[in-house]
Figure (cartoon, rainbow over the protein chains, first blue to last red):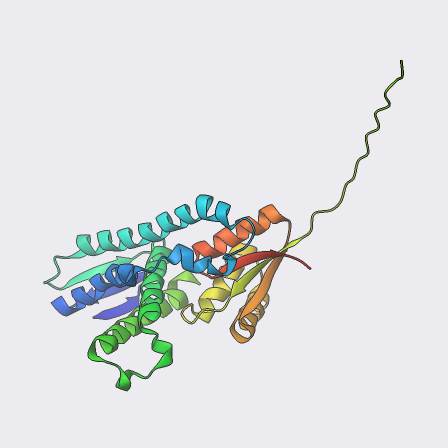
Length: 152
Length: 91
């Protein structure tokens, strides 16, 4: 898999194998895994505050919709880009860069929550955890490219 | 028959300002936090970066202070960008 910025803005991902497709399709899968409610997580410092009930009723549902919409857009882009077997290209336009960044962030947050990568070294990890760590590092790499070449 | 005297007393006090606080997170990239603070508050890069460093080093930073409605709006915006955020009355 190759990921690089485009001259006209945005990012291009060259998908070279079925394994590459699998890694990309893990983005929404990882983000939804572990039962993490991201809206609850980002508002966790408000727990117990006066007015938190209103926040839960009026704000958090909108956040959940936004976060889910990011993942659905990524799923749709992947489905449109290829069949999961043959090589293909994915173009992340400047307009879509924030939703891709957000979806990748969701995946990394969920993986960190589930595996706690910051509390261990890759060589000490179980195979499943190490595989998740590599995916998290790949997501981080794409996020860094988006941040440095598209979002800024 | 006695007359009733009605006296109205107005008591006006200023709203207590509210702080918007961003909390540290092991996942969000430092450059992204800086970018979000620039985008939402219109801060110049050096100010946004200084606030981001405070979040990173001290675990939290007051990124804005002002009236409650705006504080709620900014808190919602920051949470929508996946930053752990809360708001509190100033002391």
